[in-house]
Image (cartoon, rainbow, N blue to C red; front, side):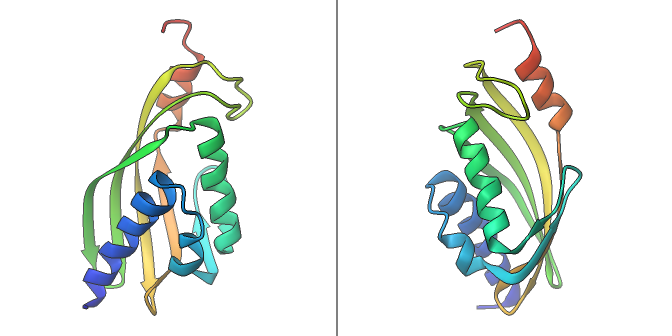
Length: 138
């Protein structure tokens, strides 16, 4: 396999296996021990931190499903454009369960070395998600 094939498969494993199938142990295989994820709402250091983040969203949105809309690769980087869907059934960002079905999108950029994610930068539509959760309309 080439680096780009490996990079795309890492993205698919992260979202199809870890997020959608709930197999958090996959994160130990695809994230390096010194992995650093940088985002607008806090950073993740190491695979355990990634697992905590995924688990928290699975608790808040038990039926969460991530669709990989695009995967773009360049050198040691791979970009994923993602759509998240789920029903708000657990506390999230201080908001108690609303039962609302929500959708949000984002872009994740990963740097890959030695067949694992070593760095990540992302941004997603937190404002749009919060508007959906806080809206009084159903």
